Image (cartoon, rainbow, N blue to C red; front, side, top):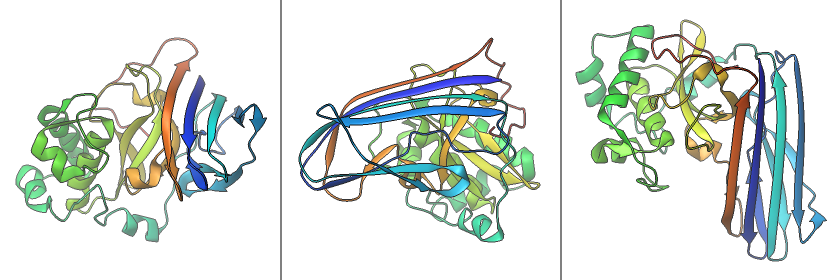
Length: 268
């Protein structure tokens, strides 16, 4: 399988802004090959950046802007083959069963047990995926960056990250380690960065996409973490910025794989 992905960003910073950007495909030893280019410029001049390693092969690119700047970013990658299944330590499995900022599993425990009390394992994963898909409406721009799973459930609508947060919270309420993965998703429409959930069952991390908007077999991981606070594609760690342009493309050579919501799929 060959996948080609790209992202173009334009953003403006104020003085003394520090930026952490996560748009590069996660490194995976299972890929047959991976080629990529990353260009960051401001005022026509190259901007120096530092690549920082994150969990699960993810990478952040860190930049500092002492002066106000208009920054242009161009990223492209071609990946052939599939990654190897991700393994997690005992500490990671503990981390991913705890409540987090956007996945308030402690507050949704009564809901989870009322809806899925007798279910376990992959049967539980499928039931949560189907329930979130049926209970929420996908509405672009309908949620705020501060909304978590509880707010999403109350409003019954959201975007991909909201669907993923709700699924993660419900699974953690049933003691299933679950995390959010930011991905490139060939076949997604409208095209953008995409967010899905991953849940750890029977020794493997299975990907769950309650939106059903793209085939999971074609997705490429960018990064993964407790929720979107760990996986934002662009964030500041000092100062501020405003995003002016965002264009994402993700394509696969040949035909897209068919999506079977009931199939067990591992990101690769």
